Length: 238
Image (tube, rainbow, N blue to C red; front, top):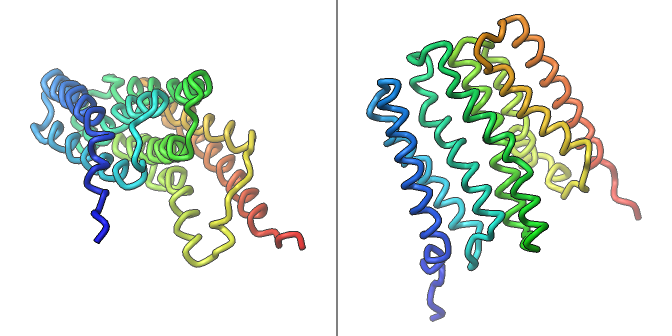
């Protein structure tokens, strides 16, 4: 019988995950103390990191993380902090700006991993997928913060849910599972979404401005997905 090598995958990513856990727990613990939050914050942070670790183990393959992957993992720490703090969002002061600060850094770091990958010649399909899925998760989490802080209604979750709805629809419509060609339009609109949602979380942002901006982001993202659906739905050229 050929030995199952899957257990050996952990040795490729475990050192990076341990460092990430130390940084994440330190940050989560510090924020919990600073804002007198629930003791569950570090626990939630560790749980979501464990989930991320399992996903990396399944999809990373038998190779260590590249320098670009480590930048993405660093950005993931910020997203995981946002997730861990989300259940207690209503207990935070309105002017704390935690979600705004963490989200802004996460958005600004988007693209750095790609630049690192090109500079070090370490582009990989797995790394690109890691970056893309983290972008989608960040949008959903930022939308969750808008709802939790009562800056927008539940409808805003549609922005973060578009990507996941597209993936789920692919189970019933095989055409949606076709690979999409590279698109500058898609890349720019995705970047605009992240930055726009962070602006919506800025301290002192008027509710009317948040609603207007978020609605514009939803329309823009919907347009992008509709274009992508049209592209993959075209019959293959014979």
